[in-house]
Image 1 (cartoon, helix red, strand yellow):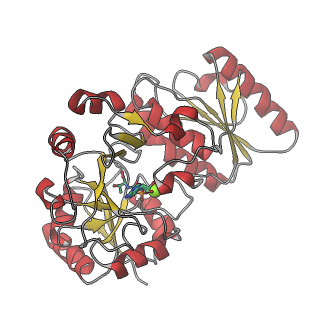
Image 2: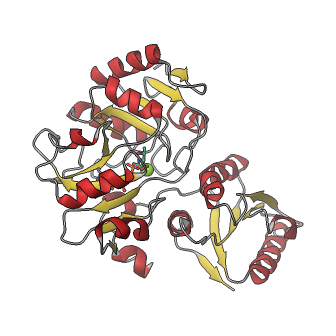
Length: 348
Ligand code: TXA
Ligand code: MG
């Protein structure tokens, strides 16, 4: 299949968006930028389109998709009950990087929700995403636009690398703004539960709706405790190399990573290091990549997946990452990093 790449790095092109929207309405697939990561969109109300999304990604079909809307009120027809908390959260954070889980209506096929009675809803803030959702009929199911098991795409090139030739359209909107997937909050229980941490933190949610809990799977950090979001149980974001996180004081971390890299190189293994602007100069050996300054969390979030992809391309055998537990979105960054590392953490 020929994939059309639409250049919208300079802004939304209405003509091309109408064409991409038509493709969605006819059951085709279009990847598009959002403020978090690129999404792979299909018509959320069509069972066939959702099946195509699973096939293109190579994703297990019990892993539900997020339905994207371009107006808050559009959630009414596709849900069976909207609690007060949902309206409050929508008012505070939509459009933006928050996904809410609500009971679904019969309009949403089970193929879209991975067989569940609930549906995940998000109103993204990216103008190209909003324009495409409107042109595509208002309801766009979209997982991250990566091959299943690869890091989420933060540039159109990442999407081309994974899905070029497998989908109809890729809208290039340039690099995304946040670089980590949306916060997911489950509103089907009395107290909202965060199923996936993201840019919108627990504290930000609590300021709007009172008590919010974290899914036990994060609190315990025990790989045996299964998260409630079906997708969080898979080993997502897994780099080809053996990734280990080194956690502790800055000096101990850099000295341990230096030792480990030295031993790897001596044994003939190539080693990558995920460092920060503050520490990059502390590593004389290995392939060093800074994901940004510790004082700029968004830059770190933005560069994490691209760095993992870059190491994949270089085929390094091992990667050591400093723990990146920055104050606010650090919880989300560490959640993705720990999953990518298959829970291998070296405490120093
Ligand atoms: O930022 C994002 O959310 C991006 C952009 C494209 O919007 N999308 C994204 O989709 O990250 P995806 O499919 O890669 O991740 C969706 C997650 C999965 O872990 C899935 O299991 C969970 O949301 N999920 C979807 N529907 C759910 C439901 N009804 N109940 C619980 N978890 C659900
Ligand atoms: Mg994903």
